[in-house]
Length: 182
Image (cartoon, rainbow, N blue to C red; front, side, top):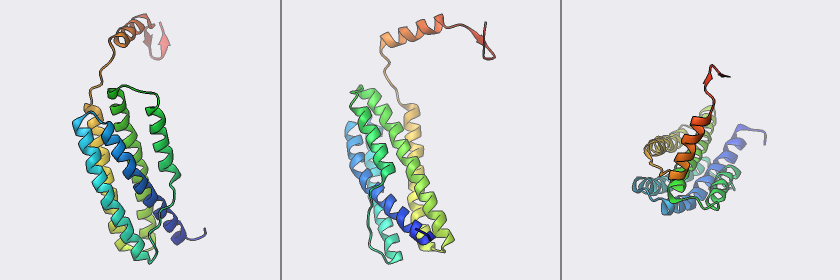
């Protein structure tokens, strides 16, 4: 790979694969969500993701190339991490809270991918591609903001035993001032 055109095409195929893979994961996360707002957000983002895929297909068309997905190692890693956590059998509360943060990781990954594609498209004077990619980026940023808000409002039940243990640890901890023990 030696040209910006080749890099752009590579990254476009990568994000196209990532978005398609994400569709499956969003169904799973919506199914696991016990919080009504989280479930609704995951379902809404699935519809947005379908629209984002269509916009990516338009970008491929403007380039005169076939829309092809390539496996996206970054997205696969994030999904693998989420599945690994799920195998630890967390409580519904904890899984819901975790999923909101796992989804934020995904959004940040996608945001960075779109920012790179937009920058490359701008360098190549691909105005139509920039517009389409910017729409996807805007949706990803809005979704990230909504996920952050949901996570900050999320109520996680803490086991009474854990709360008592935390209080005992706080009472037993030495008092510190300016990073030094007294």
